[in-house]
Figure 1 (cartoon, rainbow, N blue to C red):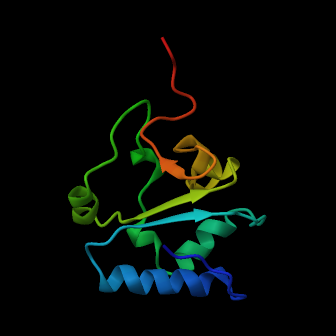
Figure 2: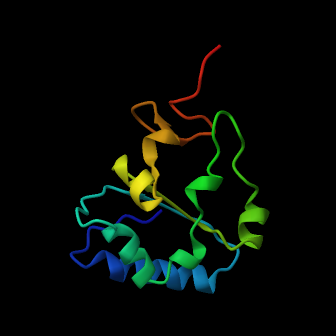
Amino acid sequence: MFLSFKKEPARDTFKEIEAFLSANPTEIVTIILEDYVETPNGLTKVFNESGLMKYWFPVSKMPENGQDWPLVKDMVASNQRLIVFTSKKSKQESEGVAYQWNYMATDGLTLLLSTFTKYETVT
């Protein structure tokens, strides 16, 4: 787990993550952002500048309606080893960054990654 309280540009932290992924080709990293970026496409710009987009796990492959997450070996084989979530709902549509509460739940004490979304239909 990595939590940064450093007063440094996100780009610098993301470059550290890029170096880690480059040096550890079988590892998967999940980033959950408390997102204050207001510049249009500013978040994806920083990911591009830091070299992380080559590891990006796209929203289009995120599980929906009870589907399973891909196997780790498949994520490693496709080199899609960076899962990024944002606290801003609009960025899923505008920048392709997964909105965290479409894929997570909390019981007040722990954060749970899930294979359901809050939009799942109940029959």
